[in-house]
Amino acid sequence: MFSPNIPYNDLPPLPPDVDLETKPVMRKLIKASRALSELNGALTNLPNPTLFLDTIHLQEAKSSSEIENIITTNDDLYRDLIADRKAGVLAVKEVLRYKEALWLGLERIEKRPFISTNLCVEMVQCIKQNSSGIRVTPGTVLANSEGKVLYTPPTGETVIRNKMSELERFINEPDNLDPLIKMALLHYQFEAIHPFADGNGRTGRILLLLYLKLSGLLQIPAIYLSEYIIRNKLSYYELLRGVTEKQEWQPYVLYMLDMVEVIAQRALKQIHAISALIDAVGEQIKEQVPLAYSKELVEILFKLPYTKRLVLSDAGLGTLKTVGNYLSQLERAGILSSEKLGKEKFYINKALLKLLAKP
Ligand SMILES: Nc1ncnc2c1ncn2[C@@H]1O[C@H](COP(=O)(O)OP(=O)(O)OP(=O)(O)O)[C@@H](O)[C@H]1O
Ligand SMILES: [Mg+2]
Image (cartoon, rainbow, N blue to C red; front, side):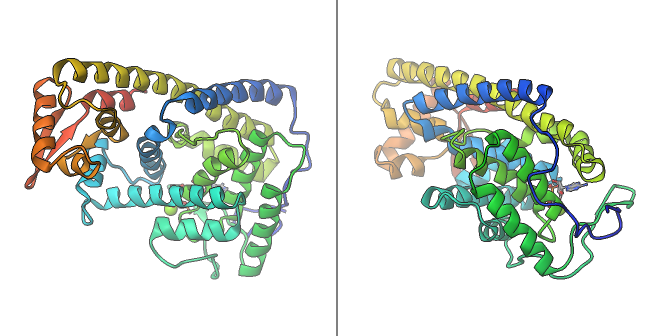
């Protein structure tokens, strides 16, 4: 029995005992799968598919951290990243850690295609930068802004570990469920187990991306799902509660499928727009600053929207003096703009930043 104030140690294992493949779900599933496979195709056909990853993952980290009220601007984020500043703004640090955790997860499943409890622990430790593991003390509750307790997750380390092992088996063992439905289920279950004292939301959102990759639906996880959750945050919370309190799986699954559809469509548009911009900027450099032109230079300008001399010279494009000249010329040609931060000058690809900010 569920009661908001009592630890939900009776949380049932997956899959739920209801018919998930209803007509509305199947209809939405087709749309979401189609959007995702178009995105997957577009990404794998790119000349340099991983070029976008850094930027996209930063956007994902930024959106996901915003859900936790860690707000940064794109400018602050990229500036700190390219300046390699260890201190920086606290919020930026948290966002960068989130991105690290995402990379860590992706690297691990690349080596071994398996999502484990330990991997979740590693990721949350990376996000939180501490050594906290599975909750061992009771007292974790989810409350609304007025302090009213809405959900008390399972308590007791053994109970939590058992539920995590069940979840681990569900995730990794083959079955007949569609992977997108499975992704929705596992996300709910992870949040309901709520294995950590904090960082469950962020870890659970990374799991979404890891599962898309693991299930082969998206080879290159260049997508940022969290933006959808931020924009529809209240219904997200309500739908999670609906599952717990009334076993209302359908609206929750539909929400997650809509997230995939909307975000995949948006990512597809963005990738086309960025690819077109890469070509246009390449042509412009060839014409206006031919000495500076190289494929590598264009790639650097699009790997992240901010760059500096050291990045170019480290990539073997010339001495600091030479690449400094290139950058000044690119600025004069209107391709980059610059900004001084301390002693260092940064060069910004404003057109790329603008595309990234587009809704
Ligand atoms: N009623 C609920 N039942 C289960 N899980 C819930 C419920 N309400 C919220 N959650 C989950 O708990 C997460 C918040 O948990 P926690 O504070 O540990 O994570 P976080 O990463 O620090 O926060 P955030 O998700 O806000 O960024 C939410 O993102 C959501 O996924
Ligand atoms: Mg939190």
